[in-house]
Length: 200
Image 1 (tube, rainbow, N blue to C red):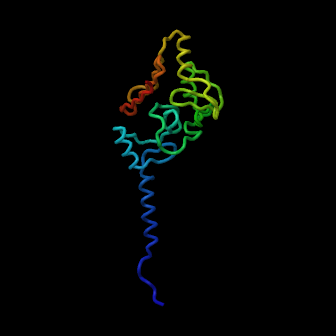
Image 2: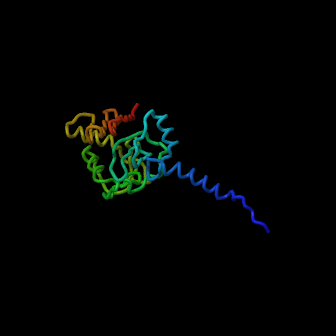
Image 3: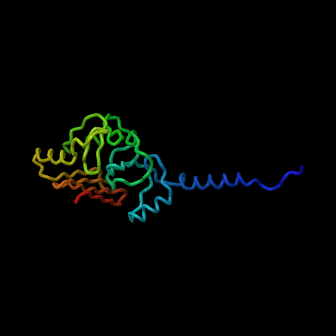
């Protein structure tokens, strides 16, 4: 029986599928929660926000809107509830404090920042939402971080508003909590500023 000299189709189909997968994942320069973001997704986000995400590896807490560089503490806040990357991992910030918020173990820098705002920190597993409501993981709300920070500030004679800033120059982050409970966050990365506000 003579052999066919035509090339089988299935290896070519596998090559096309592989190249398509390779082009949408490996070529991405932005990784969020250990998941590469495709160029198409980055373009959609850039059009939606009128800003681009700088190259890098990030973690993102969709419940609070907190974000940071992989292996580091909180760098700022963006809108909560975005579908960015994979699930938030416990070791996203390389923390060893025994304090978990929304599944992420906080590093020393985050614990210190909370304590500087007058919020007592206790080891355990906690949930926090974008409005500052918090409680033990799986339980009801027990307290509000913003209210606690404002009360601590009043006790120290600092007024009704809280302002804190980290970093300097082209890479900094500032948080302001107003007496009405509103939260304003401004983050500057490589000279480009991103602002976020929660309030009435």
